[in-house]
Amino acid sequence: MSGTDENDPDTALQVDDLTVRYGQVTAVAGLSLRVPSGSVVAVLGANGAGKTSTMRALAGSIRASIDGRARLFGGSILGLSAHRIAARGMVLVPEGRQVIAPLTVEENLLLGGYRQRSRARLRELMAECHELFPILHERADSPAGLLSGGEQQMLAFGRALMSDPRLILMDEPSMGLAPVMVDRVMEAVEALHRRGASILMVEQNAASALQVATHAYVLDQGRIVCSGTATEVGSDPVVAQTFLGLREQAQAGQAAC
Ligand SMILES: Nc1ncnc2c1ncn2[C@@H]1O[C@H](COP(=O)(O)OP(=O)(O)OP(=O)(O)O)[C@@H](O)[C@H]1O
Ligand SMILES: [Mg+2]
Image 1: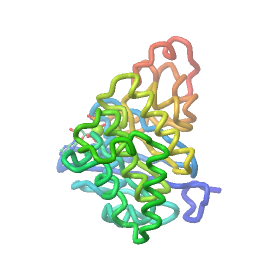
Image 2: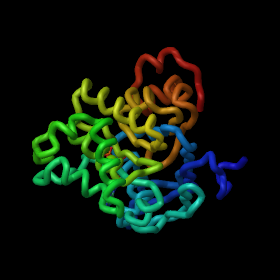
Image 3: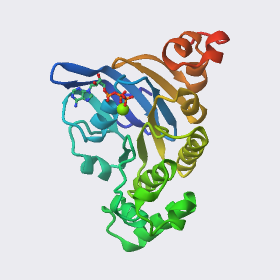
């Protein structure tokens, strides 16, 4: 079955020929990718590669000129507002977490659940957040601004979970974290995946992202330059050396792209 088939149940998100321009600046130039249902897809790229522009264009939270097509569970989403896209089951965990510092952890989580009409469902989702990320229960009454960077990332994940998403977009969840916290954040990504969400994550930290990803793409100056399974992409010597800074693989891999 074709990946662009509107009714393909195996595809959570299909993006074709996405272009994002800020005036004269082209940040994303004809990007195509597919997120199979139930997968964790990593888009790897250096500073300025176009990662955030891609995420924000897909999530409906950008001021830019956008072209191309994106279908979420078969329905067209490009150009819809962020809250309409959220209502269709996709939510963005933004770059830099963007928790509301003076509000408590619990209040931040409730903001993520603003669309839930049923109080019982809201309670269930809150309980799930607490079970997946116990720190959010322990620190429920703390202002979010007092949490560490890694804890704030858990909160940003929890806030996304409160909208009961089927697909979660993540913009550099490891950014600015110490290595031990990066590992914990990647474990949290796996926990969200096990819970049933498909995940599309953009990352600069290729080594960590490839440990949890099933599929990967490499983005360079707004263009996809390589794609494959996470193993294929991580072991491609040229990609490893040129784009990802993965020295070991650069010496001993097979070309995949
Ligand atoms: N609002 C904007 N106006 C003009 N140019 C922008 C704007 N936002 C981003 N750009 C440019 O678009 C390109 C891609 O930026 P983007 O933020 O998408 O990259 P990124 O991969 O997320 O980078 P980083 O790793 O630094 O987060 C860069 O050249 C950037 O300077
Ligand atoms: Mg970015």
